[in-house]
Image 1 (tube, rainbow, N blue to C red):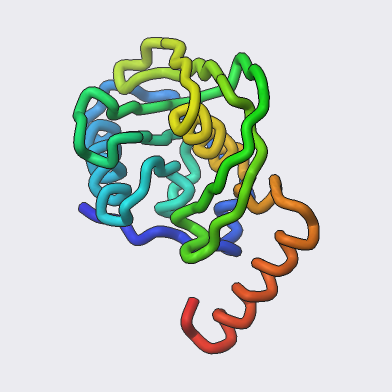
Image 2: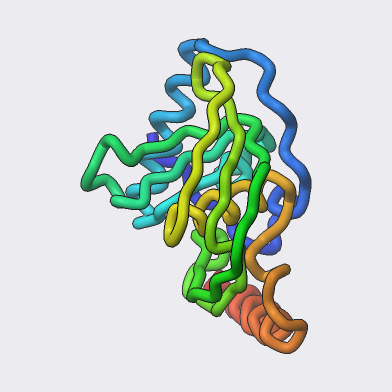
Length: 170
C-alpha cells in the first residue's frame, strides 16, 4: 500500500516519534514493506514513519532507489552514535516537495538501530548514506532539514509554502 506523504507544516513532523516496543509482528513487517513502496513511489532515498502520518520511530533507506535490494535498510529506534567530519551538499525532503538547499552534515556517521526482529546493529556510512541516516533520524526526532538552513533561507521557503497553501497548490 502506498501511503500519501505528509507535508510540512503538519504537526506530526515536528514531534519526536514514539519508540517501537513490539518486533517481528506481521503488522510491523507489512508497515515496513508499505514504507518502502511509498518511498519508491515518491522517488525518495529515505522515509520516516512520521512522513506517512505515523508517530513511530521507524525509517527506511535505500540509496539505490530500488536498484539494489542489498542496500535496503530498516532503522527502528535509531540514534546517531558517531559523527566525523563535515560535508555540505544539496538536500531535499519528500515532506517539503519542490525545495532543495545546501545542508551541512557530518561526513561520516554510525547509527545504532534495531531491525524488524528487534536485534540491535550498527550501520556506518559516508556520502549519501551518511546524509540519509542523519536526515531520517532527524525526522524521528521531529526535526526537518529546514532547521539546518540559515534563518533567511528557512524563512524564504516557509513564505513560499504559505503562498502555495493559500492558492491550494500545497
